[in-house]
Image (cartoon, rainbow, N blue to C red; front, side, top):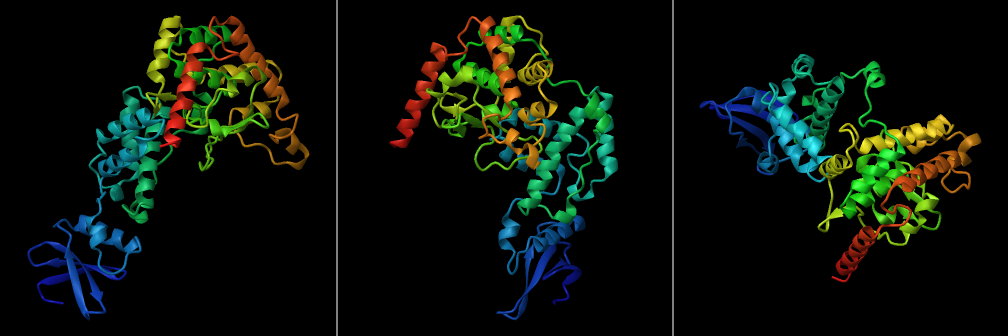
Length: 394
């Protein structure tokens, strides 16, 4: 090696070297030419240069690292999160995820190297947020976005697994038990008022699906007509190809009072606005809540909590309620498998009957048709079907 280059450290088949002028290079031996080759790292900072060469080595690359060097470099927390923006923009939770990203990018850890982060850094960030009135549950949700961003950077070979810190979970079991519901539980009368105050047909459909399933907001927003098994009158809340997570999406029976809706529902995405999937309904629901004169702490989650309490008062078994709400996976015990098999006649019968009574009470108190699609929703669904047909025919 020419005397103008000083070896610094080896990383597999690559090594880090420094030129006499202070610039760092990645070096490797090329057998076909029987010579050592180098490419500039465009930095004089030792830590940055070492991170880059280690990252390239651990990515599994061999030979000329030009492609890796031309790829987007992520070193700081802000780098990782800004790359993550491209991923969250297509999620139903984009609004919340973007807020989390912005808050962390405005924090004291934003410009720190990811590889240098310590638990003390996360504790200081937690304490700063808590001091301004932020709840631990909110801190946890914000850090979950950073945790996801770091994992994706590692998966995409933009960050070495050895440089990925463990993002701590500060929310204890006590915090989970003591946490207030995300939406205040309310009665069927309040939900009927909310439904009546909802003017947009896509939101009327959204609420109807919410009443029928008490699913999480994202599950309903991502719902497609092809998830409906019309032969067996079942709705699989888990979209095809999606891996089940801790927030389990169950298969639920279609409620008898809503069978008439099935005839009009197309195969594609159901909650649309101007021919594009809706990623957030918060603004529309807030406006409907205001028009209905309901408390501000009522929201989409209120339906989940309200149906859960309704089922509990109706004497539904806790396990059935938990399966219906996606809190647990269906039990696999052979003795009770049939109870939780979607194709069994008695599939979650008690929960289904309670849910039908729940939506029946809402319909009885609402002025807007609920057991049959109102005219505005019928026109909306016909529009979706027409758009699907147009797209199929080119």
